[in-house]
Length: 325
Ligand code: DGY
Image 1 (cartoon, rainbow, N blue to C red):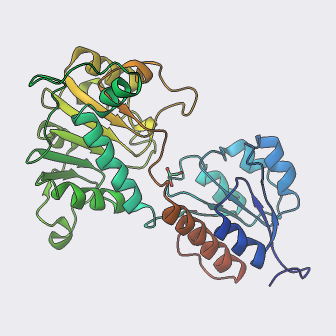
Image 2: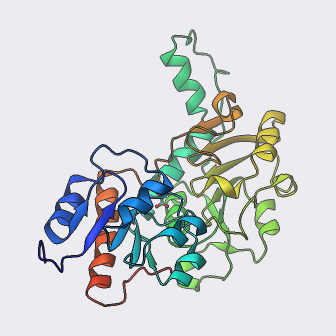
């Protein structure tokens, strides 16, 4: 469909993997961002004047103000992400803009990072890594840098959606006992022996490791607060690969400082990247990563192709598979 006057034009807000940009180039007229600069809201609006759809990432905030200013030629916002908390879906609906996301394809990659965060926190990997790199490692002794073994412990999943289910499978590989809380109980076959808790508080009480996998929305914002942290078993570990907003930073940091929680493994943060709470950079019992959940070559290609499948459907006047608004 390339290069006829009818070929739809796509504003691509970030640099994407080569295979994804090749397919975009083949099938659409594209406004690429080869230098990968972060566009301001007004730059997006200006560039959108020439576009029929926008392919964007969670790094751009499509709030009601920006969506309200988009020109009427914009038919769709195809997200290169499963999370859509950066997009005001109601504002898009009101303006008749279709919004899609990229579920499924990043579940394995994110589950890998959740395991890395769990092990990094439990086995003090951040602390040990820094010690070796900074030439501060002096000795080995039977009492040197003891962590906590996760094998056989209880693993609590908040949000047993696509990612939560893969994470639970991986945790089973460590012989962990799986517990979960979800809006709805899964069918027995999908539970695979996981124990359902119909309220979050009950789940917290049995979670030696608590792993967050719920989307960021008004119901989940600040969900892990001081009251709930107090319900976790003493010395438990918190893993967050969902969104920073699900955690109350001050409450988590104070529980980590006091030692009520043994450790945390965090891939996502409020205010990321630069505005994260400074305590996360300093605390020894926090294992941190820079939002790497979906950052594998395979997954980033798959996310791009999924976003393009959605755009292809929209411009063929079909219902896109991953419509969220
Ligand atoms: C997602 O897909 O939501 C990841 O966090 C990257 O944006």
